[in-house]
Amino acid sequence: MAARPLALARRMERLGTETAFEVLARAKELERQGRSIVHLEIGEPDFDTPKHIIDAACDALRSGKTHYGPSTGLPELRDAIAEDFTARRGVKVNADQVTVLAGGKPAIFFPFLALLDEGDEAIYPNPGFPIYESMIEFAGAKAVPLPLLEENQFRTDVDELKKRITSKTKIVIINSPHNPCGSVLEPDDVKRIALLCAERGIWLFTDEIYCRILYDAKHATPLMWGDKDRIIVLDGFSKTFAMTGWRLGYSIAPADLAQRIAKLQTNCNSCPATFSQVAGVAALKGPQGDVDTMVAEFRKRRDLVVKGLNEIPGVSCIAPQGAFYAFANVRGTGMASRDLQRALLDEAGVGTLSGTAFGAHGEGYIRLSYANSQANITEALRRMNQHISSKKPVRT
Image (cartoon, rainbow, N blue to C red; front, side):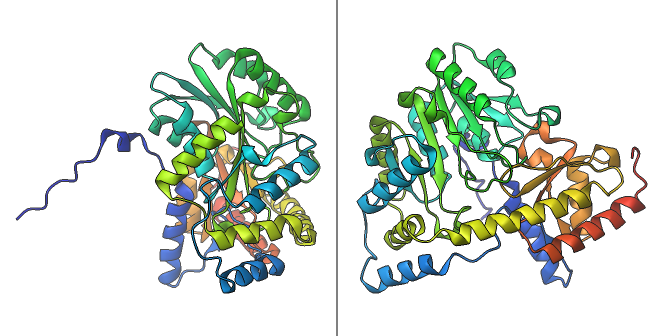
């Protein structure tokens, strides 16, 4: 009997993906074939989770913390998150605004499902984290791209934002520090955006997952100026504490929306892992020296990768101010971004991501994650320079 075709719901046609994992799979396949690959494609710290956090999780497991917890998250972790946010951002947050989630992505998915109806519009940065657009469209709303331009240091242009707001605009999304560009919004940018959304009665979604990975800039949250009843914050433990595999994130939202986010979690995955949440308490309340050490090392790598990229014919790169990504302009190579991504991986053995993996406005760029050792970054830059130079760029 012939296999029946898979009849999927139409909503699946609106669901996007995250290209980084596809490129990583291809890179791993090449490694299985014996190829040497330098991984600059995946966005996760290459550091180990600090020991005191691991110890807290092990102690939790041994003491029987292996059962369900509240769908909102453990009270002790919600308290710790509220206290830490209040102390670091200078804005009072209460525990009833916090929902602990199984990673950062549910902090995008659940609020969008809770707020967006068909016919609504949501404005998102482009290039930007691809899950924004995917989740907006999956929820049935229209995704409206806001281009981030190199001449504006890849920061949100508030005047351009104003032009895209309509009577249907329900949510505006900002991300600072930014993935993939490494840009950081200046406090005045954040203030203007927050006041604009408050004036128009628009929800403001602020992705602050990289807020502690900063170099020469300062982080500012829109909660300092905006309508606290219309602001949602995404944050988590993956980037700051090198805990990507622990799947631990959170949202901060008005208390009535936080209840709905928790209800969606109940229907999806019940609750985050209890022992991971105990580890989260240790991360926030324990020593912070490992975070400082990691960021200091990222600064050195940033300087190394930016210098090296600017020495490659046809390539230029402005210095990122946060996160651990370099967004390199490769227009001078004469190659489309995706073609260059494939060539660098298949021919030069360097994993990168095409700028178009982050939206149409990423054409002409590639993203490099410098969450790798300085030795590996140096080797990757050598391979890239050799490969691109041999292709005789159209413009230098």
